[in-house]
Image (cartoon, rainbow, N blue to C red; front, side, top):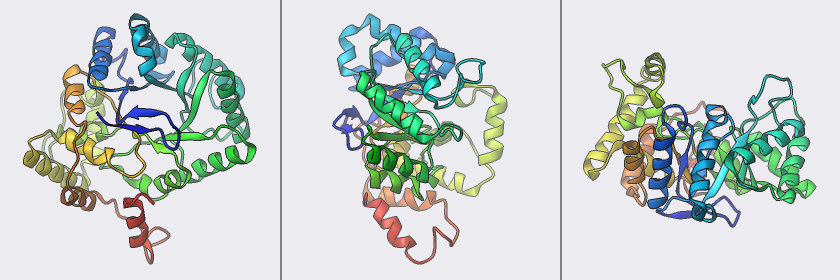
Length: 343
């Protein structure tokens, strides 16, 4: 396992993180604890959860695991999130001081800890002034309830505005952004990744396997009929197949990933994870496994690095393409080189 810092912070985390969205739904508590044990055995240190994962049950499962293994607490970098509804009232959601204060305290109680290492606002809130959200996060750092603040599902301008405002007011700045990012979803490279690179935020990709697509589970002429992403209703698999499977680029990417995997003697998932882990700005890739077998396969990507030729092939075949303006046209090629170089 390799280790990196959370953006420009001094906090080190494993390059692969364990996501817990399956805990309490697709994965029962015993299986969830087995995943946490296996992850730590493999050198993993970064665990990511959220208050809305299984309506708080995921945090409780992690909390009970920590309570049974107190010796693990100091080695675990624990992250959670708040923003989405936690009740039926009009103030039981959003990024207001009122909601985040209650949501954070509830998360700490479920996790059984006095502080979390990374507290992330789960998505932009158009109703709450950004100053109110950032001031609360700064207060939470000063109170010792959180050690770092992070963002999730923000656009490029939202990232930049949050960073600039925090620095201007002398508040604790966000150190990470958690976005969707994988070989089939690279649009964040247009503005969001450059904003993170400029501001020094570490990128924490979720859905690194594209909801199972990059494992090779879908076939061009075989509509899904069994278990789908995270074991959900098979109709969701058909929906995903109909939406993404109509794009020829999807199948070209899968063919390229499969070719690299066969040549390397590894799984398609490991190739996709290795490609993502080495993208500019990525601090840690968040794994989401339903079973211990899936987690074992994902963890085998630790330390796997693709060759320059393999990376270039995957970059080319997965390029989502852009319109001429404002992303294309003069300067587009140089901008692409800057992103590849981490500038």
